[in-house]
Length: 218
Image (cartoon, rainbow, N blue to C red; front, side):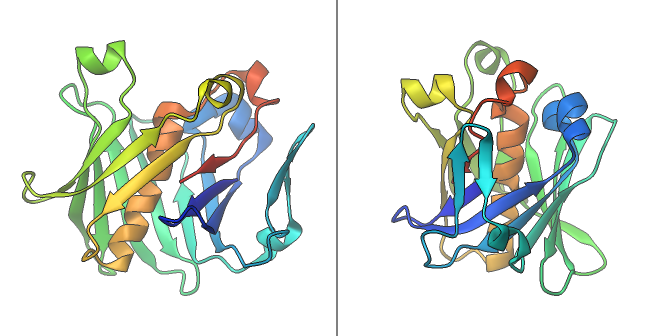
């Protein structure tokens, strides 16, 4: 379960992953999945809880109507992408793509759909080089797709403390965006943050993943 909170740390959405055990076992962080992004009600009991056996998900979260569907198909090639679909109309909002075969950079391109064509609107700079091989990159710049000099925001992975970083698979991200960005572009950026988490920060150790808390907060 992945959670999305507002600036006051109030949980507003929960993204429940739907994927098979075999996909998680054999594909690791490249596995196909569907994230159902549902609005979390004011009822504090309607949340996901951790237990000795892993995460216990309230059935009402699973049956709640999804505001967004973030779908990641199985891809054997080097490029990774997710499709972002409106949960109510089932129309494609856009696509987030990462070309891993590039030697210079591994930027994520956020493309907005108008029903027929995909138009790049945002580029998230992930960086690639010796510096990022030595130490993990925890800060990602959100840039305009046409004018790279125009900064639209940042994605920042926050240090969660020694205990959480070493003993759990939980990650905390902060996202800052221009308030003038359209809501559909913000939804695509949220999907991009999920993809960044899966690509760069998920622990794929088969022995530890079964016992670690599978919850992230954004």
